[in-house]
Structure formats: C-alpha cells, structure tokens
Amino acid sequence: MKDKTGRIMLALGIITGLISFWYTLEFTWTPEFQATELEIGPTHSNYHAFREALLALAVNLLLIRAAIQGTKIRFEYWATCLFMVAFYYTGWWLAWPIWGYHAPYLGAELNHLMATVGGLVGLWIIRPSRT
Image (cartoon, rainbow, N blue to C red; front, side, top):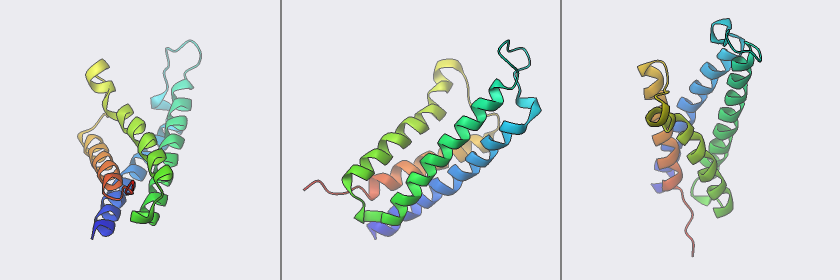
C-alpha cells in the first residue's frame, strides 16, 4: 500500500510538473515575454524561460525514475531527488514572500501547489529505510 500511495502522489506531482514545464517552455518563443527595456537584450528573459523549462524537465525526469523504483529506491538516489526537488519547489514559493513574485494565474499557483505536494509527499512515502 505504501508503494502504491507513494507512486500515486508522485504521479500527481509529475503530471502537474510536466504541465508547468510546457507552459514555461512556451515563454521561450513568446515575444510578449521579452524584457523590451533590458539593455543586454530583450530576448534574455526568453532565454531564462528556456533554462527554467529544462530544469523543470530534469526534475520531473528524476521523479519519474523515483516513481518507477517506488519503495525499492536506493537511498542515494532518493536523497538526490529530494535535494533537487526541494530547491526546485523552493524557487516557486520563496520568491513570493521575498519579492512578491508568483505565477500569473490562480490556475498556475494551484498547479504548482499540486506538483509540490505530490512530489514531496510522494518522495517522503517511498523513502528507503536506513537500517
């Protein structure tokens, strides 16, 4: 039951995380996302969207492998996943109280919430025992 529950939570995090990946990737080629007043080039913000999208893809690929392994996951891989997703999700949430930055729509905030909860809770449930 622990394995199945963990995989379901990870699936929730992965599905919503991949949705966020796709919407972020779209900012790569969206002219309206350009920072037109930026002296180093208006497409610099598009470049950062591309980098963020690839980071999102990498984190979700880590979670996919964790979901496949389930409770048979080795501690080293589990710890690496936890480290990566903790910092990735922190990037979603910490900017809000510090600078007031957050996703532009309530739907995106809810998507981020589901991805965060699914990813972290799923990893916690499948954590390996340290015997």
